[in-house]
Length: 85
Image (cartoon, rainbow, N blue to C red; front, side, top):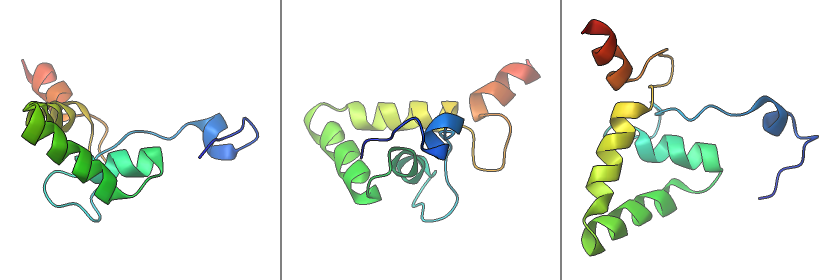
């Protein structure tokens, strides 16, 4: 879907967050699907294919889990860890 500058979401920008609703594990796939406005099944399929063929799906998922803040939170897991030390 192409967004135009007159679109309120495009002008304001959507945050990339780990979502709480509809998640199976950490909410990375649901957050990415909501951000890209695509079906969550496609994102899960992409992670699965990256895992099976290249082994990168799990690493990318774990990195996104650590870097993306959860919906309703101000900091990601990595940011809160860095601020503690």
